[in-house]
Image (cartoon, rainbow, N blue to C red):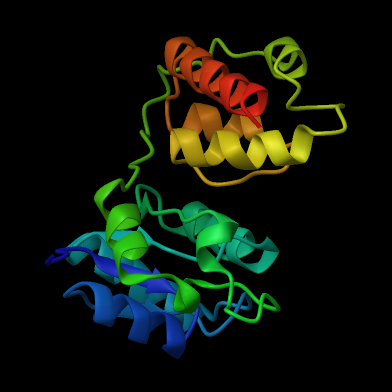
Length: 188
């Protein structure tokens, strides 16, 4: 699998995992304190070849994603759920621990946020409450699974509507994902 865009990852081990799974070039942020030089490199890469942000599904990874999204509009995003990035010892998580086939799957489902101001999400806070995604004992678990189903990554409650809007998730897509989530919980 050849990837045209340059993939932004957090570190050398992530680059090793990416190159093991696909033919791609990477830029490493070297942690969540992204330097201005690295951001300039990402901006240039976006201009020349396009960029896919593929960071770990944890707080530092979400922070890196947000910084890049703010400074380099239009980047694409690839996501892997936490379960697919856990180390064998279960003590850490990261893209470097993912199986090759999981990396390829995530890169085949890259999301491109639309920069259009026209899309306004019809999904409301009330919808999130009704779907037990906020103010519910299982809300965090349900948001994580919803992020997997919609391929938009896990979010906290404050970021969920923003992420759904950014990736232009429709009411229909949202409803189908919630139905699947409810069915899965019923079958547990």
